[in-house]
Length: 326
Image 1 (cartoon, rainbow, N blue to C red):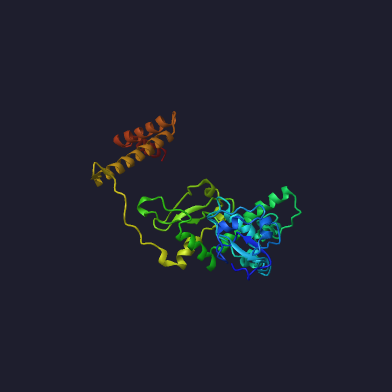
Image 2: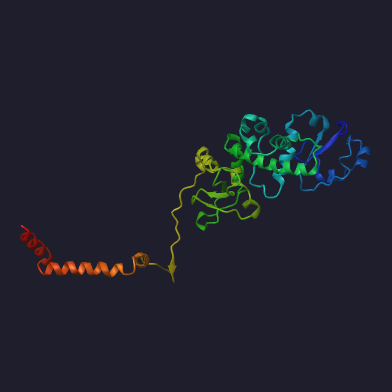
């Protein structure tokens, strides 16, 4: 930076990736409040550099304070969202656009699902009152996480949201399919229910069309409602070229290199059917009535067979009796 291009004030914005000037992190690491006041090039107007420690691997930008204050409110709304996305366990989430959050039409109905909805929304947009006590702020923080998750589920099925999730899908941010014959195909988050606090998030593989549990316990505890049941299928409807061809590879069981004969499968099936039939017969026998009623019924049948063999004498005697009466 040349000496004749001296800005009135500088600050370091760690939220923006990229450089506005050709400065290195090692140069910025040596800048402290006392030395900066004596530096003819950098003149900070506040003590922000005093306890600053910048990693040499971290990209940062040098902006004038005027550039910062002249920007839109979106610069401020990124603070809480950036902190949330940077927290461990939230790698599945993408950044929801500030314009989408500030449009109340997109948040229709969420006020009945989230406690302290107004305060949670203010926290997400960095407008929360700083006078809240610590206990109340923890409650609002929990509600803000839940609210952001519900907003996230709506945002990722929009055009811009699908684009952001597509980038994460290409980078395999959601992991790879554990099935060997899927050849480490990327996964997508999906829900088994759109109702909050019902099911945790699962991972969907479009090659084998099956779902899996996340490997990390942090990811496995995420509510599935923050992604929804429709997201992966909506993504492949918008980007059909991403749908891979169905794999015809199937694992073939072998013993000493020889495939199992179909007769073996048939024998196993017959054994299973035989066992089920035997179980039903045993259950039917156990359900038959027991006691003196069973022998009585059998003796009645034997008497009927005996009468038929003797020419039905009981019927003949009855007809003779009727003739005598006449």
